[in-house]
Structure formats: C-alpha cells, structure tokens
Length: 246
Ligand code: ADE
Image 1 (tube, protein in one colour):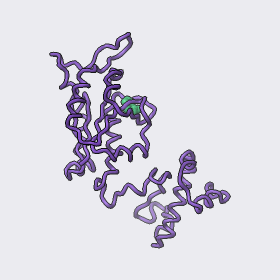
Image 2: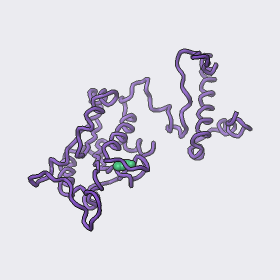
Image 3: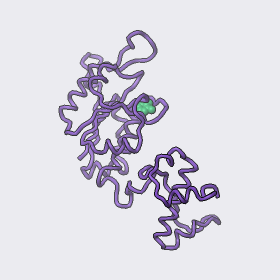
Image 4: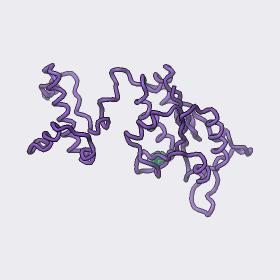
C-alpha cells in the first residue's frame, strides 16, 4: 500500500477525484491510500488562523509556520518508510516522467499544498525534501498540482492500471511520443485507417508504430528525439531522406 498524505487548506477539493475512475478503484483495492489533512485543524489560536501578513510588507498572505509544522510532525509520526515530503510550488523541480517513476518507489509521499503568496520559508526548510512544479505558470494553490502529481505517480504502482491500460508502451516511457491510435470503424466519413493495422501482421504493425512515434516526436518535440534511446534501425529511418516530411 502506498500512502499519499496531502496537507491542505482545501481538503474538499480531493473528494471528487478520489471517488472517480482509476483513483477510486485503486483506493478500494487497497493499493493506494489518499488522505487529506486540513492544516487549519493544527492552528492553535481561537480563530484557527493559518495565514498572516508578509513580514517586510507586500501584497497577499503567507501561510504561518506553526500549523504547517504541527501538521507535518503529526503526519510524519505515522508515515511508513521510505517516505518523502514534497511541496508543490512553481519554483520547484519540473515534474517529468523520470521524477514520476522515482516518486512511485516511495511508500509514503507527504504533499504540502501552498496558498496565498506562499509558505513561511523556515517551515519549508525544516520539513521539505523536494519542491515540485508542474509547469511554468502559477496556479491559485498547490492542490491541483498535487492531484496531477498523484495521478501521474499511481499509474506506475503495480496493479493500479488494468492489463488493458499498461503504462509501459506509452508516451515518454521510451523517450518518444506515442504513435496515433485508431478504433472502429475502419473507414469513417470517407477516411480509412492505415492499412497495415488491419493486416494482422504483428511485426509490420510494430515497425509502423515505431516509425510513427519517431515521426511525431521529430515533428512536435525534436528536443525529446535528441535524448531518446534509438536503435540503429530508428536512426536509419530518421536519416532516410525526407522520411520525416513525406
Ligand atoms: N502552485 C502554484 N503554481 C504551481 C505550479 N505551477 N506547480 C506546482 N505547484 C504550484
């Protein structure tokens, strides 16, 4: 069982995603557990304040260190090893396939979601092992980013995806984008699917799909092609004149 503990001011945001689709199935099967904890429950003053004005002035509010610290201490006392504490932040390490698979190896991932102008830097320094960004834009809070992180990570936990949904053949796994997919009807609105897909010839289909992956990656994400692990055959295909721009 892999546990994701989310430290948040808005635990209700997780209700729908935990109750739907693959998350719901993985939770009921006991493969993962997603627990939200309301940081406000750890505030000790009578107004249950979790934020305060930024020292030195400026706009917005900053999350106070005491409730975040108390929340982390409580959750960490119950975290099974190996565990990691992450903070969702636009200033963090970019979330990539490599980082996703690394996070899938932890038994417990504790995820702090920030709000307002951020979190007091001292409590981050005390508890956070890794700051993670899901892209170069700013969200209203870390909750949606935490959901993206959990969603990407649980797909790599054994049993979470059914046999029909394997994570092994898809985009980024081999460093390339996925080939285009087709389903029935074989001719739709006058447009036929590539004939090889109807041939039943598995080797030809695999070769066709590999070439389409290379073609798509070269066209949309040439940066990925530079880093991908390519076979001799792949390189032959790429270098064949005009093969990528028919
Ligand atoms: N919180 C706000 N914006 C974010 C981002 N881009 N990634 C992760 N956490 C965030």
